[in-house]
Length: 101
Image 1 (spheres, helix red, strand yellow):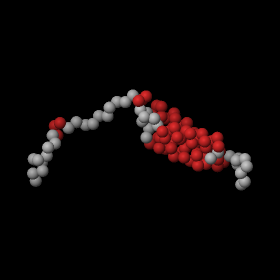
Image 2 (cartoon, one colour):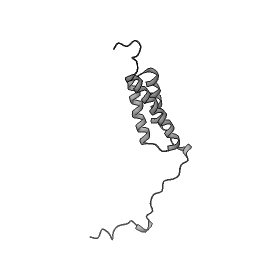
Image 3 (cartoon, rainbow, N blue to C red):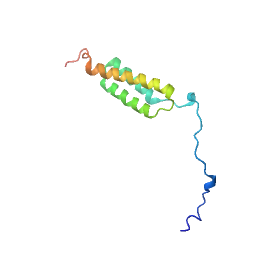
């Protein structure tokens, strides 16, 4: 057909996209990692199971969206440890005071 003759694109002018370089301090804040730390600390301190599970979910989201491995990995690992400590103490630790079980 004549679709190739009417094509306005120029293959010789096509260039691959190159993402601009951004300094690590200029990257946006990792809100999922920060929320994971908050929920993880809440799960350990107040022994809330839901808080520890939410921390684990936000950790997974933060790992999936990690941009700066150097800085983000420390925060994600800290949140992961808090969430795992909270889950372990909630499910295998002594019962909460004042709770009938």
